[in-house]
Length: 454
Image (cartoon, rainbow, N blue to C red; front, side):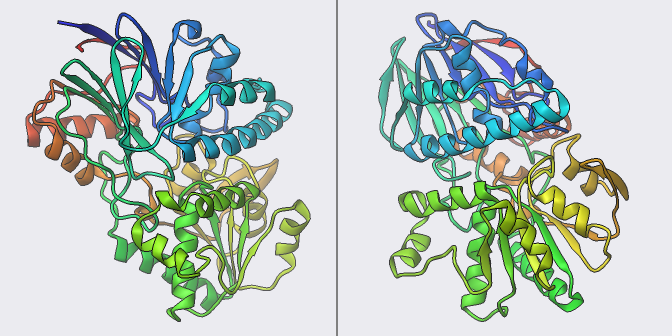
């Protein structure tokens, strides 16, 4: 019997900071190395030493390019990692964009809040030099007699589950599991025949609206804004959520469901990421690929303006209402959305629409929880605007989908590790899996270590 250990170095008791260490004896692997996030883009805790020696890690597998899964990779390299990084091609391309944008945010937070930057740009370059890409469903060997395969996680462009096999034993790291259905992406490939599963639980205690309701709610908010002559503010998650909304607005305008309305995509990062979606169309679902190949630019429609420069961003305030502003960042803890919130949250005719997870302590979470007065960029803001929420645009599977994923593939599982969620969400899902499926599920504590038969 081969033995291995897994240590949960991050991404437990919290949605962010995914970082899992797998030691199989002959080799040590990491899965993801993400930022811990909250009231700031970079929490001070991110600067702490890793609870392992980065120089002994042979391979880092990256599930996808969100900051809470890749944000500390350049720090890992700075601290001594010299192994190989594996991901899909789209993930590497997006990581290049996301990490360089994150570095700019780090410089801003270092100057404004004294939060030490985690790395230099040269560390991003060094990380990318170690990075190799693999397609879905193609097995490749790694040290320790282990075979690895990426399968589609359906979460964002290029997102993958990591399947590791040694002899007859199998471990699956889900990364973030996609919501079903999504406008742009295929559903996640259900993992099967595994001995151990390390899964996310962001929405382990909640149920999303269905896709029809989701689209109707978005269009309803747009029409309500038009009727009131106001402004619809949407804090942009630059990767996936923004592209999904643009596609659905595009389709609604082009089919005449709604009349054109000025829509400002006010996020250079979201614009750059959107360009990646048109470059890597092979990762999109067949229906969307056919729409693109038929000549439809799905991210361009009457009324849409992409504002790349600060001058263009400032010009939005001079444009007449009604209008829709999609601006970074998604949790309102930085980016251009904050200037717009200062300008527009005080007007009852305006609406702030939250379309993604809001981390504990973030500005977005405070607004979601109903705060009526807060301080943004040293400005006191009274919140009179309506604050609305659509959960159905989440890129994360909800509770029924998470349970169903295990029900369809976990028959022989020795243990299910529930991570990447707030404590309440993870524990709720653990209990659900135990009660409904009878599986051995557990929510690990930070830095807790388990022995595996692998």
